[in-house]
Length: 425
Image 1 (cartoon, rainbow, N blue to C red):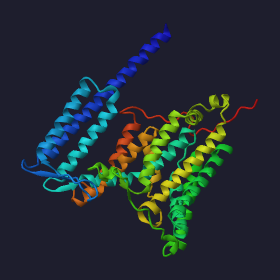
Image 2 (image 1 turned 180 degrees about the horizontal axis):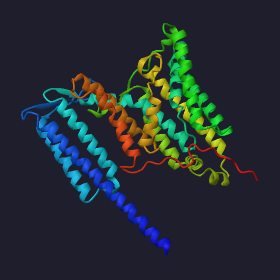
Image 3 (image 1 turned 90 degrees about the horizontal axis):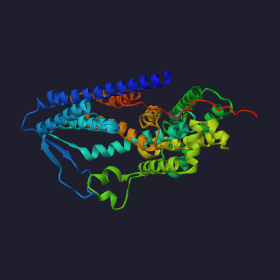
Image 4 (image 1 turned 60 degrees about the vertical axis):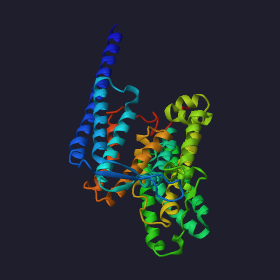
């Protein structure tokens, strides 16, 4: 009788929390509508036009730019946010709440762009193409992290693996060629990851301490080598991979220049998301990989070698992190610069959590962070009245909101960060 009563009280409590969250989100939508209408739409002149450029090169099929009335467009956006807010408060979107939140976020960004470019133009296609490029190291780094954590190994050393691989790829690329630079990056990331795995799995060192040690070591050694040997040196002139257009696809208006007119790293990012999604959820290896991260003791009981699976996960994680690091030297700048990763490894961890430890979610989160950087770059050219640094804060604020449980809790693998101790018979 008491168990039934406790169960009923628990159900009511969960319902109250859900209703509170529903009203909070609806209220935020309405506040967004009020902001768009009074701050953005009302001061805008009725005859002002905004132009969104749709062509960034002559390789894709050319289409006319999008020209529309700025004030009316902002009023429509405010009305949509208001309607979504009222519906969320009264009925709730239930299972698609997160999707609707993302939609309102897109509407807000669109409102800012229309307002910022009122009376002028902005290349929307160019901005989205830059978003894809900027998302590459973050997305690949997030995929690296989720492979490790899905097997139960917390890896905060992605930043160190990336910066060390950026250095070795630049040096090997300068001596032997670009592809050997990629190989050097894979080996560097894999070697550092195996050190992390060796300490975490065999000696059960705290995984946060192990990862921090690798980060400090990688930052120190790469800075020393750069200052001592690479500032003016032929060892730091690898060049970079040129863009390659995917036949036929790159000619599609808007979509082609955004997704199919990039270099090797963008296409590998797409491939990693597809292959890893299939491997994790549709193969025997994926089932075992996830099992050792959720219930290692149960996996061991079924005959799965937990230690072997975790070592392999560390190796795979490190090689992918190394590839992400080589992007900076071989896919972007064409040389190595001191601390050039600029914390992207840590941002990748945030993207992994925001993406709920899934490849597709990591891609979406990586695109969000990439879009923030792209948006900052474009709006600075428009002399936007809001400081660009404030716009860069948006993805981090959204991540904090998600992790705080306002739109649903994000939970990682149950055994992540916990060393496994095999029971002796």
